[in-house]
Image (cartoon, rainbow, N blue to C red; front, side):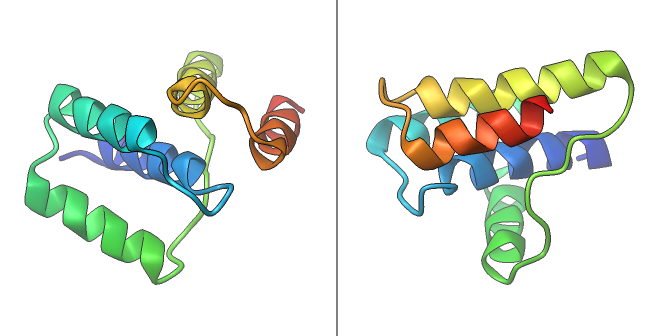
Length: 97
């Protein structure tokens, strides 16, 4: 797995946990994206372990197109459960700046 793929899935995981709760729909979306990105279950566990030990939050960098793709990934996580929490709205505002 390359660094960009790792960062994308890590960002989606961090987005799912921004309100400290992960809904079943968010879990399903993360699993779907794990498969689409070609991340193995073991690689996913490592990313989750890194997240749990505080190794980084949401990181958006790169070209304009890469930043836009990262923002879309995060929004897709936020809306996957049909609800957008106040914490998720706050995060979208900070990212959009």
